[in-house]
Length: 64
Image 1 (cartoon, helix red, strand yellow):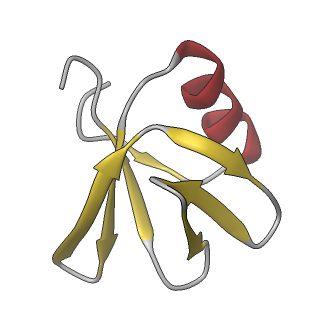
Image 2: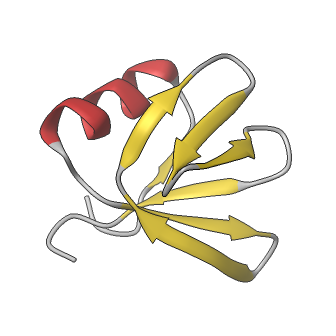
């Protein structure tokens, strides 16, 4: 769903496998938008940048 926060491993896997873009926020500030290249327990890689899962919010953006 557009605008849905993603936080579980299966959310990241689904978005990566289906090539659904995500937006990255730090608090209310938009930082990036793109496709998940990698995800792990601590980080999510978008546009060749590793974002901490503890410091950033990830939001689904299908159809972007």
